Length: 465
Image (cartoon, rainbow, N blue to C red; front, side):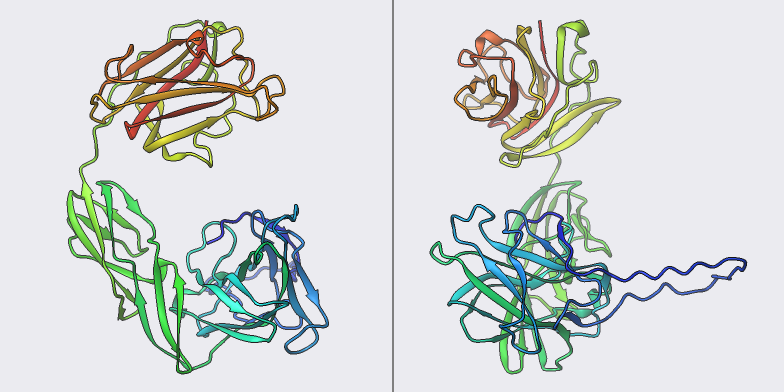
């Protein structure tokens, strides 16, 4: 699924009627909430009421147009310009037609539309249920759809219409170039319908094993699909697992609540089976729930350096500089906040490497002599356990690249000074001169931690003299 952001291109606007009442009152007791609109039209000759277009991240933002020449029916169609591979305006075309309020789609059984292209191509994704908020629950998609220069009807069956009482994602698509060459896609007559020819759902989930810890919660599972017979032909769509109802084989290990949230409540193994409505899904999810690893119960030693001699990244003792992110988009780690009493810590788990960035306001540590960090891990330490600290300076220009960047990484193990140990605080207080390849310290913009202890708690990260 294409990751997205809320880049809004307003194609049509919802009409809002405001009634002003003065000099009278009205008893609103007992009134039912207004139902959500249930119009089927997404785009016929014009956009349906309230529909807006939102482009996906990294797409060609001006890819969408209205075409009055190439139409399947009526006077106009939507057109998408898929860019060439070297187009600086974006490397693919894609976005979502959304309804900000949401529609009640429970009376329909499919989304249908017609499409063609200026050359034979495979469209990466067609679908609905993506409202471009990042929190879409009921997404349905088909991938790698072959189209050509002739109009083709696409039918996307709705897996379980009763779920769609307030759906904001009306239609979405994403398509890339063919061998580096761009082309044009037309889409017309986008609407929800009740065809009455959709039957025999065959839902499926990917059989998989998930390892977790007591206390974990799982919101959704990847790899759900359903095959339905559409007018005599089987059509398979990918869907989010929110359409499914899960049942645990052992409620003392794993529970599932009414919202579909799976919680690991005890140590052991349980399996999850699923239904789409009343129809059993093929496949089983096995969950192995382990006791949580130990956590620090006491804080690291409180720093004693005078505040005037410190540039603090993270500590409750000092005023901290601005940090852009504690877990950069490019890193391989999970992050959580953790507290011991009123003491704030950062917890990294599934750690391979984590990027802490303060690139907007690089740290000037040129007057400092040492770098400090406290670290605690529950991981067992052996001869091959390694914990690494890297500092990156962006140079005088203050940006990555430009030929003046420098960096250096230090590695610590069970026999270094200091040595890394399990279930105890380790205090790294390192002379900056030990970072020998760090030729400048006036524009430090990144701290990167990595290593084989895959769970670490960190605190008191600062420079001092």
